[in-house]
Image 1 (cartoon, rainbow, N blue to C red):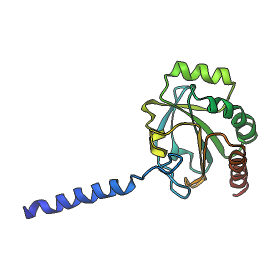
Image 2 (image 1 turned 30 degrees about the horizontal axis):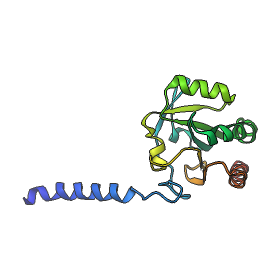
Image 3 (image 1 turned 45 degrees about the vertical axis):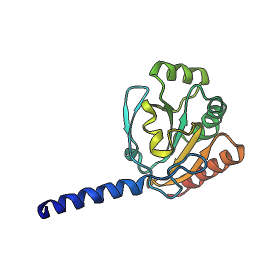
Length: 177
């Protein structure tokens, strides 16, 4: 039994680490908080390319969780396009829509109808979404990540004051070197 003790201890420590990382969702469904390092993941963009979040270090990143069936998402998307993406797309900035659990054809039709031009990723099984929020919670949320990979702002639904706060935070981050 003694010879297996180190293996058991490693296993127990690994289990404890995983359990410590699992958070109870907050009132808005988030399992991450401002100040956390954003979890790394790989996403497949609808143009067929793949992108890792960690590859975007050095840029301000906004992850917009969305879906075609979401009426609030359809309301927010033009504001993101015109007030966030277009003024900042030529800076150290990336806005990526992450479409929750829908097939490529549906996502393409959704984007075409909205007329948005920022990159969009597929999120089969809401696995990317689940890194940031409980899968039982809804979309229409934005996660702002600074140039060092730290979460600095979180939105939920489309509330003008919160949206304006997000834009101000993005401007502040882009103004710093």
